[in-house]
Length: 135
Image (cartoon, rainbow, N blue to C red):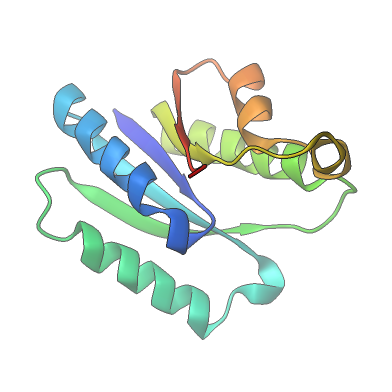
């Protein structure tokens, strides 16, 4: 049993990681931390972030795997595309729970790019914990 932890902005990742660690410990499940990057950004910076996340999780009581997951830029709306990628990861890794962050968006922004959290919640068969990243 594995919890998928979706991270796209490492600066905002800490509340999501803390929540996932509590869930992992409480449910006795390991974490699969997926740092989402666009293919053209998959360079040394992304690798450094993966290493930073792995170091952050080292020594925690929950076993965690940190991976870079590449997101294709094809398509018009980013939200549904990222949600689709997350759902594919969930199927490939045999995920039983998803933890992800969410920041409120204005109506226009939601129309332009979509909303990843809403898409994932709507289309997955596993429980989803959405962590508010709003101040």
